[in-house]
Image (cartoon, rainbow, N blue to C red; front, top):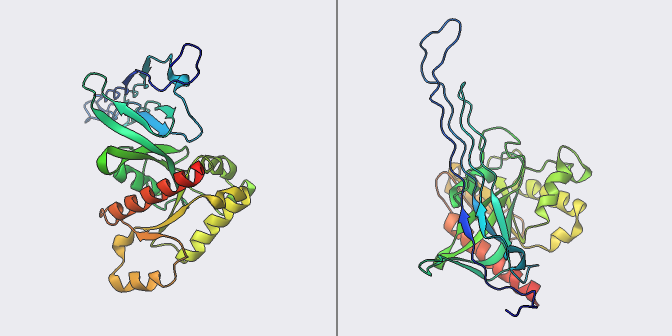
Length: 289
């Protein structure tokens, strides 16, 4: 790199994830209990360092002077079984094709070859569970709607040290494109993803097609350009389906690449990764042209 050039293709940065917060050793005490059992909460997880591909970047200039990047530590737990807050993640956006190496050994850790995959679905579709299974991310998971209120990012490992980013977008509801609920705020996050993975649970009260079309319509009403992004449909919670029911459902699926998965039973996840990787690379080739 010349002194006058703004093109930087190499940076050396010391990165450190945040430490986990300390658990609380508090013992329960109240007016009626002098020697209760433990009621201390777990410490929050330390923040991650996430390297995220961005097809609009062509240089590492924005990272040139960031020599140390340290994610926030998790916060300690407290009494009443209250868990500490998780540390905030540090997200480093880099050009596609960026290779991360161990500075001491030269070992290739991973290569960023693609942008994000965005998970699209209604609340309780199983998006957070899927992300927690295919990556090291630990989003909050519970059996009620709107557990996810902010996007969670996870690095999904693929074959030959390759990886891609998966974003768990907060659940969409019907009418989101008109601002219902937190619709516009949620939909804005979807624009940043290169491939859209629609997640519809096998136990939906609607048909698979109906649920998919409602989601698709909300995206189109919000921004018609989203219809140009590659789409994949995953039927989640499919471990509850027998072969006969699954074959019946296959006859009525929309016309797009579809896979039946179960995050809990680890079913169909390898096939899903293969489909996502193919879609990511096809999209990258199209955007290059």
